[in-house]
Image 1 (cartoon, rainbow, N blue to C red):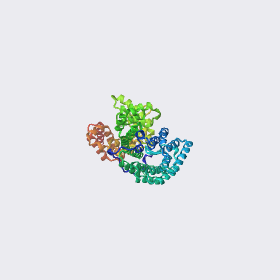
Image 2 (tube, rainbow, N blue to C red):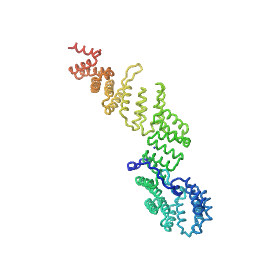
Image 3 (cartoon, helix red, strand yellow):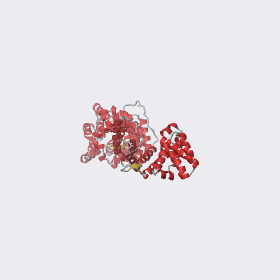
Image 4 (cartoon, one colour):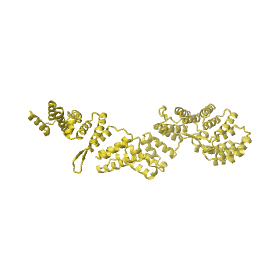
Length: 570
């Protein structure tokens, strides 16, 4: 899921949902910069047909250049050549550029030489168009700013031509913007920003310029200034789509997924960009933001557009699993596994396993089957998951199923993978080891596993620190230290004594607890009575334990028998 953590703490700006302002319809150049190439191209073609001129034909061809279609561009330039001025061969320049962008150097060089000769190397417009072409036409997209034609980029030539153009026309903001692009490609971000600022001063559209400046700061990892300039772009033109898209990707980079999802949705709305990849991006960001229902709703609302991509079934399945809709999760993740087995990752098994464990079956037997399948999937995912302690869920299942060796093994694996055990993990680890401490040989004779009992006591001691008022933890610490030895050894070493005493103090005054733990309390009294007799030789204390036991359990035969024997001694 990672460079996304870069400067997370440094970002302080939050997203908003600005109302769509009533702004004039953007021109074709602005539409192109906003990524709305289809609308821009349509507008340019319509203008060329209605108002045929050298300029309108060039602009129609230019629209095709910007979207990576130089062949189509050339057909419009050819129509405009007869209308070119003698010393301003604009459409001939377009033809030369079309060959340049197709990496046809032989044709491009000849034609570029011709147009430069015709314009006597003095036309700012011609020099600008050639220089801009050598930038490859920088375009923002999904958090990056890249040339449409990467193979033809030549920053040095771009700077050379654009500098000459700016010397011929010192007030053209478009030239300054292109110069900024050229210096960026030349890895000179400071000069690039200065050129962009000059473009702004010369009246270039602010939204486009601020977005460019934001891109430069982003590439330099100055994310605060990047955000600031993207927000300025939106303030300048609330319908300027690229700024929303760049903000979405920036916030994704630093793990601020809610902002990323919000800005992606705003971009889709403003740009009317319903491409499947953008809709999928929105669903992914909402999932990462833990807005699972929103992720599912986006997919449901765009089922036709997204259905061909199997990843949507993964997003749905993971979301349904988290939303505790296990049947839908099982169905959609299953569809994903069928459609894209080569793309399966451990998280697919994790969410599928969690879904099976969440199924509410109609009977205990069906629930057991579902849980068993779920744990099988979790066991596939657990070794690869560094975020969630799936071993804890596995251990919980095995503990409840009374499969204590597997429960212990799962929690041992959790420790090996660096997961810290919580109080419940520690209690289960202790109790499973305690249970395994009672073994039988082939003849059924009890074999005490001292090591198991020691592990039980160690785990329960840690659990007791985390939850000191939980009486079962204290009880089984006492029993672990008792059953690890023969009864007489356990009494004489006294290891169980403090825990039996504490357990009595915790439950003796609670009627429901006394009834629940009657056998354990009797064992505790018998142990303490024996300890005072065999170890402490404290007759008074022994008598007090006998009295206390009979007070709580007056009809108990064992305590009555001990009391009778005490009286006979007297």
